[in-house]
Image (cartoon, rainbow, N blue to C red):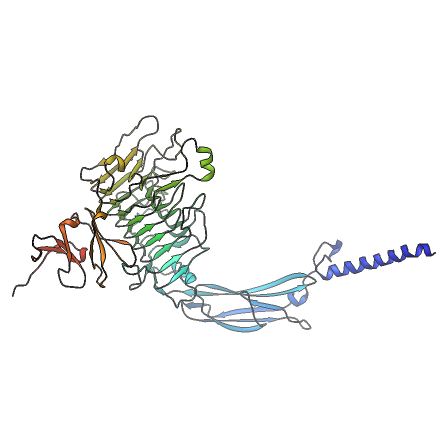
Length: 573
């Protein structure tokens, strides 16, 4: 008997242990339904509880408050449940005054954990926000990102959003729609100017090829602030973020007025501003060369928009669109201006008028992506410098390692009175024959000769196949270096000296505060022909023709360097 007692006792202990383990597992959230495979049902304390929430009023004007009230009543003999309002723990009943920055949903979640299983119920109320036609976002604005997005989406026939002394983080947001009759601007007195960088909208997240803003309407103005992307270096691979995409929806009426002006747009590895067209239902879409001012990109500073092996553009005009790009400064972009030949779905070709811009010496670096370079090293390796003004063709040559290098390259490209100080690569490359024409008229190049500055491909195949050559006018100037001789004067009336550059086609001033060049005027006179000073005795420097005698008053002058030549009226005693 003693020899069999230990096995029997061990069997009893094991059986008791199995029973304890099974019960313990159920208490910790193990299965307890039929067959042990279904979770326990929520208790009546949760399923039979009374949940109520209400907002009063349900619609408020922006800046006004609403009161959200809620009540959670469990059945009798039930203990308290966990109650949260929009994620924050609250009492079972209560009220709260809220001032939502945008239309918002307020949700009460009631939960319990029973036998290790979590369950919840919820009830919600909405508070709509109605915006006035003008909304100012400043340092005192609560949740400025939500206010901005909410106001852009308002139902007002027209909407203006002004930014003043504020940084707005839109990280995580993409495709923010800007409809018709909308203005997103720096508030007067706070906007970007020669002595102030201005308000800023920025993101910090890599976002593939997604656009932050998408302009989908007409009569739109975006102006007077900084728009900063997430990539300060040279991106590689699929990181190709876009700042603003102008993409008119289908319609029969042409676009009348979209303006991007007085902006600093930088760190977008895809493109700062892209303009595309939609050809449905019109074959020529809503943007075309007979209406060049429909989209105007003017007075901006595009810089450090870079990608190693594709894109990295300041401005891109593609998919049959047309834009006027004028009085901008470009620096450290892979291409300052890029063009995509046409919309693939129709014979709607792209084009641009490029006028009175300043392209500084930086940028242009092209670096092959690592995987591509590994296999293509026999053809062209490492890095090289590309061009700044571009229009792609619509065909690929089988013998070329580059895409869209031949065929038809856009429709109409007017390139006039620009100053190009970039010399690491070509200034202009048209990669095919234009459907209409390319005119290069009255530009100033630092390149030594035309062949260093301008190039063109033709149709695909052997030979150049150029049937519509670029019309390079004889008034283009090569071997020019306006940076070699700069003037100094106060062009903004605050006692600080600005650098002055006369390129031979345009005048520019560089602020010592922002270190940015700004367009002043379209004038052909160089610094050697001019004198700077307060001709009309106000606080702002003027520009006048140089006289042979320093004591002699000029006969005419340009007020503040921005006005036309006007006679100097001298009142005699």
